[in-house]
Image (tube, rainbow, N blue to C red; front, side, top):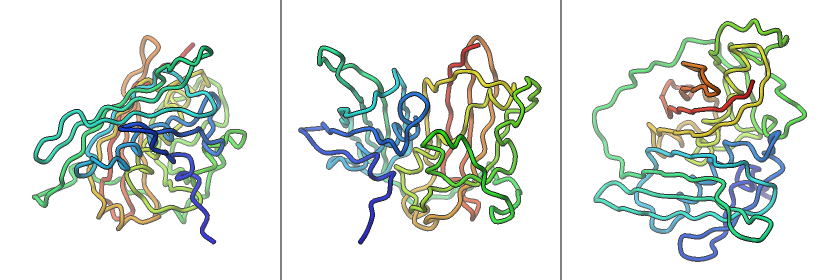
Length: 274
C-alpha cells in the first residue's frame, strides 16, 4: 500500500472551475501562527504545476503574505496572464472567507515559467566546503511546532541559540536538509525548502522576537532533470541577512544538491517586532 507523502497531502488542490482550485491547510505543516510559510508558497507553486495551460517549467516564484492562513479550506486562483513563445507569466491568489462569507485575500503571487534549452552555463556561486551530512548529528528544532518535524536538518553552523542572551554576532546558517520522510525533489517541494530557515534575527541577536515573512522570491536555476538526479538526497541550504532596520530584515539564501549544483536562490523581506 502506497502512502501519500505529507507534503503532497498539504498541497493537494482540487479544480473547482476555470483557473480555480480548492485546498485545505494541513496540521502536519502547522506553525506557531497559521501554516508554515513554505508550504503556502509550495501550494501557490502547485497551482501552476498542475494547471493544464502551463508552458515549460518555473524559473521564478514570488509570494506576498498578506495574512496568515486560518486553519481550514481556502481557494486558489492561478491564471496565465501572458504566454510568449518560450515564457509564460502567471498571477495567483489565495483567499479565505471572512465572518460574512466574503472572500478575503491572504496571499498574492506571481510566477514565470519557461521552456528551458541547452546553453553554456556555470555556477558562479560555488557550494561551500562543509562536512558531509553523515558526519553531523540531526538537530531537534522546535519539537512543539509541527512543520520542522517534516524536515531532517543537520546544522553545519547557525543552529538556534541555546541561550537567548542578546549576544549573537552572525546571521549565517548552513545546514543539510531534506524532506522527512524522504521525497523526490521537484519544484513544489523546492519552493517549500526555500523557506526552511528559522528567522535570521533570532541568530543575529540571540533574542527571540515575533517575526513574519512579508514577501519571498525563489529563482529556480535547474530543471526537472537536475531534480531527478538529486532524488531524495540532501540539499545544502545557506542563508544570511544583510540588514536589520526599522522593523524589517532581509534574507538571501542558496540551495545546492550534494553534487554541488546550485538548484535555487531565494530572497525574503521579513517583519520583526521589538
